[in-house]
Length: 223
Image 1: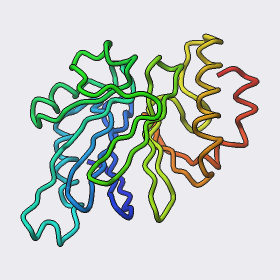
Image 2 (image 1 turned 90 degrees about the horizontal axis):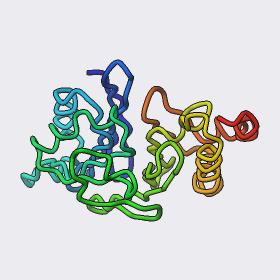
Image 3 (image 1 turned 45 degrees about the vertical axis):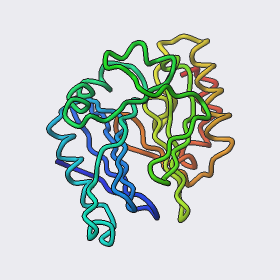
């Protein structure tokens, strides 16, 4: 299993790619307590189970010495498209973890959603804060998650709403594109720093600084 790891002040982020669609799955582990949050149980439950096991190593030594163990506290689905939820039922069945998704996308997800997310919602992973950013357009209820690292840079998990080279697919619908572009500019590029690392739902990541010069081009081309 190929995995990429980022060690932050209070958390560790692990990433794997699953399926022939190169879906990204992310695991955030609180170093202080071992609580974990999974982003997009896209496919391949055995690979995700191995990711959870690997993440158990990311708890600080003084915590594990007390006998504390890592545990999956929440599974967040960034949007309702089928390729991002294929392993969701298996993960929930195996772990008993509750689920969260954008309010307007939750009805389209077969596995029941326990927590409905809106723009401005906040998730707390034992002191590790994740801000919910609504990015409408790819789907009506797509959400991104922002993890601010006190040592910097910050990490933004964008689902299929922002990639290297542009925003997510809006099916050539001008209204949907305009909405997604406006949300990405106002809620992501305007308030966040250039060194913010973007973790998309498929493929390689990027930074806001690498993408910012192309915003005008994206607006003009309409996708």
